[in-house]
Length: 219
Image (cartoon, rainbow, N blue to C red; front, side):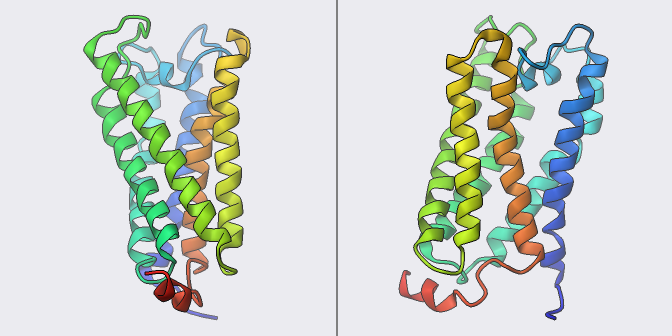
């Protein structure tokens, strides 16, 4: 059995990130009287004047940091190990994590998201950028993964995440308003969950490996 290096162990931070985010989403409503998770967005829990903001920040404290460390470790590990399309997909996914972590911290909702203040406009702009980067990265990973034999399972996970994301986007627009929160959670957990998947693949040393020859051919 191959000995795991420090960079492999950093993959576990992807799971820590997912657990931290899940705890914030599930438990923060306890500090938000009247919050309805089925109809309200997750971002309402971290709005600037939300009563749950303090609890959200506590529970969510490991989400962004651990998620970024994990995905950056993946970026370093896959150099010259995956084909070009796959690597581009992972790099775009890492960029999405940075935009999400920095953008949402800098521009949280002001509370009343019906008012188009500068801060709320920037929050929407960050959301659009996150969605575009997420979709582009997952498509690249799907194409790159299915183009060879060594990363089909990773491509399958990416396809599942993309399906969740699309279902969430369609649902939030087509479903009744009272179910908005249900479908929105499909989208937000798709990206966070796939980051954890990348972390597991890094920890188990399943990123690349014998795919070096394929990567050289597609450079």
